[in-house]
Length: 348
Image (cartoon, rainbow, N blue to C red; front, side):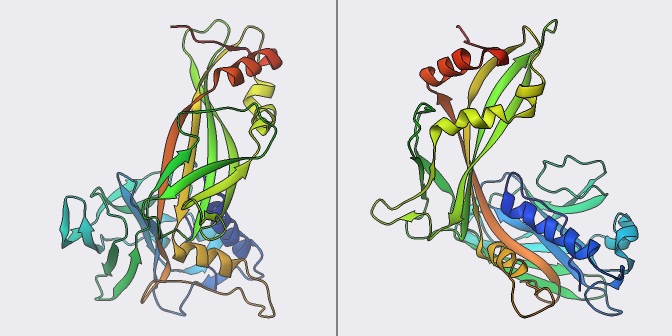
């Protein structure tokens, strides 16, 4: 059976990009593309999404299985989407009523292609997302209940994970050292850690091309490290950490397409800051990744789902970000050693 309905991608995370790659490999490596996804002759509800305690809005993609050619019919909205609004409820405690278990009925929003591939959910096809704007709480259990018009009930349950707080660096970051350094953060609950963490840095700068009056903002992404909560845990400091080499910052810039291939004479660029983003992933999605990437004597790709009476993944995550100033000496090095990029100091 093929897991085709992996349409969501968590923003800025290699772990989640891996999921859609797996799905595509399953599709295009199959000898026969005429498939009845999941159950022969039966409609299966498919759920993909996560609860993010740091998000203003939480989205779920809820679709259905279909019979036919996956490659040809996959982009067809009517094949994989219900023609009516499902009764979708999320039961748990919310920030506006932290001491009461209440039921939130999820609303829908329609997304028309083309869609931003860097957004949280991306499929390249028309889709309906179920969402709520109520603020979620950390370390709380939420029950998802989906009722179809035919009376079928699909359920799942997940416990939200803790947010993170950056400890080191604190106010600014320097890229002078060629020695190994550490980024350190703590879980908001010191004794509970997420299954998997990924740390990514984003260098933010603005660009003013010759003859233009408006600047354009750009970012350079730098993958800083990842690992399980146990692997990254420093028990003596009660913190999590990843190792990185500050000096490698300039190598990341040298590999950036905009800087290397779009630096005309007299271009002006201005440093805006360096953002550190820490993404924590729940057990369910991490387990799914491990199972789907496992190798062994079993020939068929193993399946993993935590959806009762359906298929898919319902998990949790937390994404924390902090913008840091870049140390003046690092900016001076950028201006002095890479004059072709046109970086300038901002004078107040």
